[in-house]
Amino acid sequence: MNLFIVVLGGKILGGNVEMHDVRWVIGETIEATFPQLQSEWIGISQGLHLDSYKLIKFVNGFRVSLVKSNNVATPEVNRLWFLNFGGYRPSDMLEHHHFELVVAPTIQIAKKKACFKWTQSVNKIHKDNHALIDCLQDYSVSLKYDSLGRHDAMEPDWTGYRVIG
View 1 (spheres, rainbow, N blue to C red):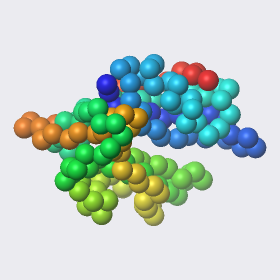
View 2 (cartoon, one colour):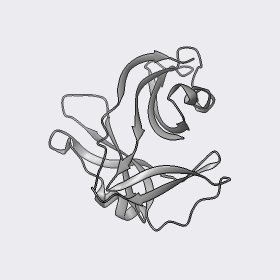
View 3 (cartoon, rainbow, N blue to C red):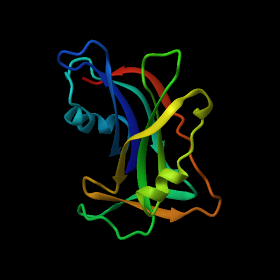
């Protein structure tokens, strides 16, 4: 079983622009996650599409894997956090976003560890959202120290426009 982070796009009732959301889902393949992605989408199902996705293997020097758990979190010191930051560019009306996955024992430490690759061009950076990624269906996230210290950058394995709804 694999952990994927996915950026979805689609329409919402009454909206004037496309809405986006970030989801973390599990499956053997990205296609196996489509039913979960469709059920979690809060917008109009017609036209729901993938904008990008990434298979998560390594974060901050830890191997990320999934273990069968019957939906009970494992008591790990370090945990996997999702952090979404927002910021503004003087020449653009839209708020820009950057998200990271971070391994840390607490959200406070996770926020300090999160790295920004775009801070020089963005003003008023702030944390919009965070979430603990621990239990997914019947699996828990397992973090094992990686002696090579590997970290997968938040660069997508795939980008494009793939309709799933």
